[in-house]
Image: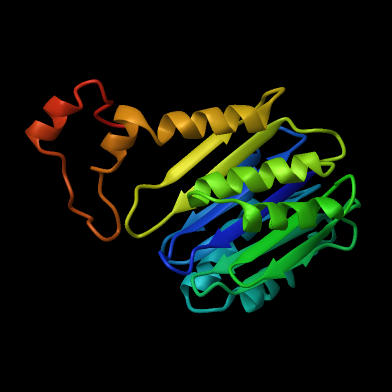
Length: 234
């Protein structure tokens, strides 16, 4: 039903994830992240958003991603129909694929990266997503978008795609959380939304809001005057 990728930039400490599926609202169902914990992707034929939050709790408490995934998935009697992947702040990755997940279903893990998917045209989609990110240039969000496109080009969700999402976090940045919940062209729409969110007045405004490293940051009146076409709140 879904393919997802979670990544960490070892130089900046930023973390991110992207996902696409042949169903609705992949961003709300699949992707979770915390600057203090890492990233998670919970998916499957009966996905558990509880898994996505619980594995972040485990990692925030100090568990490495592989142990956190095991701790969360082992007690769940419905785990055969679910997938979970996680990436901690040190770049360790963990992944679980339930025995009754719809094929093609699997995961790929590497340092600072984990890819997972189910109901894919083939496992080649997973390799294409990972390679697409590795080969791409630009910012983390741009590379994640390239990874999703590579997955679609390699065969995608066997039903085609209906929704896509991107989530990037870092101690020095405002959250970038973008979702296309239903579209005939979700990857193109997600890329267009990313371009709007990372350029122009909106992007300038986003650089003025609080971050973990600057929790009390506030725009000045001069900033507001300069960005008077930018929304004051979101």
